[in-house]
Image (cartoon, rainbow, N blue to C red; front, side):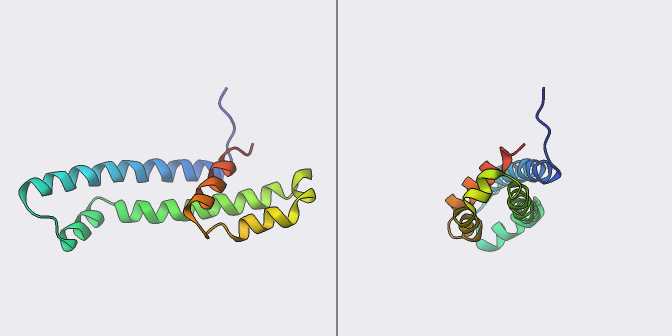
Length: 113
């Protein structure tokens, strides 16, 4: 039986899959261009735009932010949150202090049911 996911979790999963797909396309385009010419910054920027990688990245960041916000409001109803409110709120306040903390919080948010 598949777990029931929230809209924020579904949106994040969709955005993550789209980003990963766009990244694969970008990698293939870079490899193809590299075989023909040197990759300049201008060429790279054109490829990033043409493959939709930039848009997929922006969508992923927005989905991550929505997921984090959703998880914070959702756990406020849990007994564990009420007992550890200061520590948990500090974690959410510092979510952007490092990519590792952000990724960990995203992974934890995806486990909420």
